[in-house]
Image (cartoon, rainbow over all chains, first blue to last red; front, top):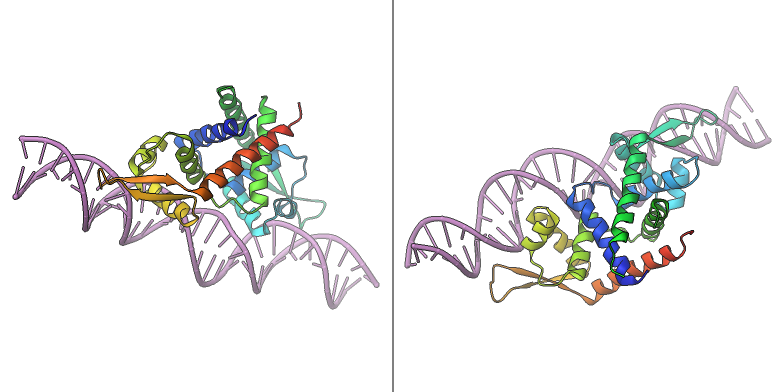
Length: 112
Length: 112
DNA sequence: GGAATTCGTTTCGGGGGCGTATTGTTCTCC
DNA sequence: GGAGAACAATACGCCCCCGAAACGAATTCC
């Protein structure tokens, strides 16, 4: 892929999200979401914070927001009740799937 | 490109931006930036608002913020002084170029 | 030349994110 | 079992974004 194609892809992708009003996630939130759905579990607040290089409140707040949106859920780790395990949801899986399909679709339309 | 590869690309891309602390742009701001750098000029506040399906204050604020960051600049249209022409900057061009290169780099590393 | 339109900006009240510091709970270690 | 550590959540003050509405400047239309 050439840089010009990459930029076109990036533009077309973000354009559709903005145009359809689905751009409510910040890049940090999006990264948390994708990490949870792509990387092997379990995912904890501390683990996500360390992986993304951000503070823990950032993760807590991202989980609050995306939990409210139904894209992710939380569960206490019964083995160590200090931990919170971040879990996927059906709605979140559909959302992530749609993102992937959108990238594929826009990549297909790129000029050679 | 398969959906799984697209998601991996999306994750790796956003991850680097978050990790490097360069994720200060909202998706709307990013879309404005890419539109200005990829679509043929001239770009006006009204034109960008219509193209993105957002209100004009959104564009004004995006130009304020990205102008402060030096990624974009404004100029009065002397032919019709009601209009504001959005212009590219050297810093903005470098920033956009880096985004493209990052996508290319991450795409290269994708599993087949 | 005066009214109406167009354009970008500003104002307003409200919502959310940020980092730092603190809190409450749970666990570890001796 | 008590002190300290580890974990997630919360409190605080700050800043930015949001949409709707109002505003000032410039242009167009008759």
